[in-house]
Length: 213
Ligand code: B12
Image 1 (cartoon, rainbow, N blue to C red):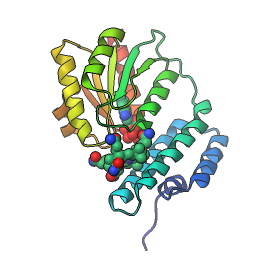
Image 2: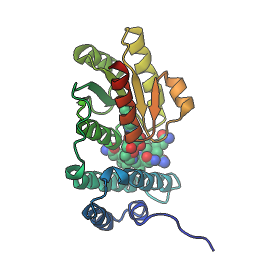
Image 3: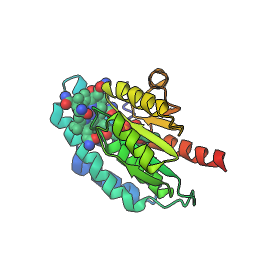
Image 4: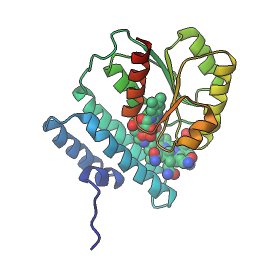
């Protein structure tokens, strides 16, 4: 017999059940679990939403709804994310979604977790052109640069952005993030690090800080 191993939370998100999702999240939060542990389930639920969109089981409105449910859950968990007091030096991280891409939920989440770990985050928003990244890197002089991208055209934008920054002698470590990324994409873009989840990304930022101490 085939068993369904999907958690209630993953299924609720995948099925775009807004109220049920919020109810389950509230239940979990009342049990005093670390909300960061829920992130993988959120991401998996939305991955399935994307897959159903690809298979034309959902329309674009399904993606919009999935994004909205995710945004609402973020509002719920925000007060529960504890300040971890890492990094008294307030390391500066510049972050943005690259040109041609408007997905920002993942980027916003990374920003939130970095801030709770005492990083100082400068968020350039979405659809950020390579020249804009360069201007802001020169202006802000961040210690770390993070590029977010979820759609295929983002890979070229990441590559162009990184090439421009390196050509202009910006030496900061560059991390790219987004659920579809892999080693081959990372090599193509010329990034120093690549991640498919926020926690690994924040851990890399912490390691970078420690390596400078
Ligand atoms: C919600 C959603 C939308 C929403 C976005 C709302 C918003 N404000 O972001 C809306 C409806 C706007 C949307 C639009 C589109 N979407 Co869309 N979308 C999604 C969906 C379902 C979920 C994305 C998401 O928010 N995931 C949850 C977050 C938490 O995960 P995440 O973004 O990966 O971020 C995590 C990590 O990757 C990491 N991370 C992310 N960035 C960074 C950066 C750094 C520095 C670090 C360290 C870490 C990090 O940390 C996060 C937390 O762990 C995905 C499916 C999927 N598999 O992801 C499709 C998906 C990305 N979309 C897709 C498509 C096709 C589109 C559209 C082109 C549809 C259309 N026809 O218009 C447009 C794109 C418009 C554009 N130019 O950008 C495709 C992309 C396919 C491809 N290979 O190119 C996907 C994969 C769906 C699919 N399977 O077909 N989308």
